Length: 217
Image 1: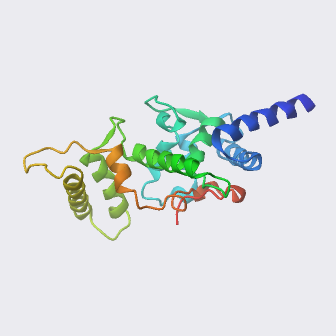
Image 2: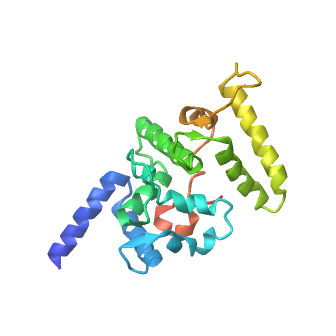
Image 3: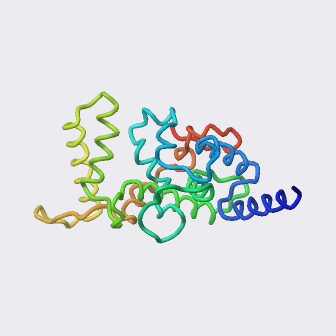
């Protein structure tokens, strides 16, 4: 029993260094992981689809898919997992971790860049390094049309106009017949330069009070 407990504490310490969560936060997130998985070693998309608080979220599928996107594991591998274990789950959750009073300016900048990269990956669904008009249009349509306040065609027109504005800003000398390939990560980062990320990226559906990690306003 003592050896098992020592190993568990050692594993948690490794995860503390990798994710920035405290041991207490990791323990609470592990409890929630076990609830979601039914005490299994891995979770699938179906497990997350059953979370009630995600049911009416207009970008529900993008949020779920982000947990299985290999790009969100702090590596360069493309593709997605069919299932993920607790460490992969925790790594994704670390993208939502807010800075603490001890977080240095350099660490805050790194965290911000990681959050922006995470959001970029959610939009760049084919992993080609660009958010195309089709990808951008899909997200905007889902956000606006599913709210019930605007029709799909109107949402598409708004998406097209927004992408045109982005294109004219990022490529000021673009001619009328030029084709805009899409938003690169550098352009995306520039678009979000004035957005305060720390309090906006959070996940409520996990319902773990000690982590203060929520998804929603």
